[in-house]
Length: 109
Image (spheres, rainbow, N blue to C red):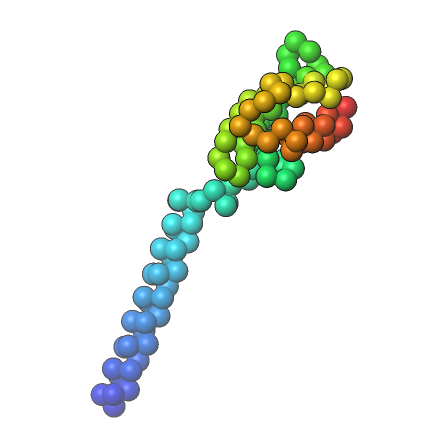
């Protein structure tokens, strides 16, 4: 009888510990999300556009805030008329950045 009571108490304690651990893990994931849980925006290869806006002055230009997988961030202007990215050089890979810009131009046209 005594063994049965101890066994029941041990199972109850293990269940409570498991629930508490599960709640702590869920709390950590909700309060402290890593970059893997962030929604990046529109991506082409390793380059993602986090912020996409139209130019106030020229409606054919898009202002893009780009980020790559290495953490490089850059603000660029995509000229949808000419299909050019400005500036022509920077930390973010221009091949992927231009492909992303052209893709966005097709979406907003």
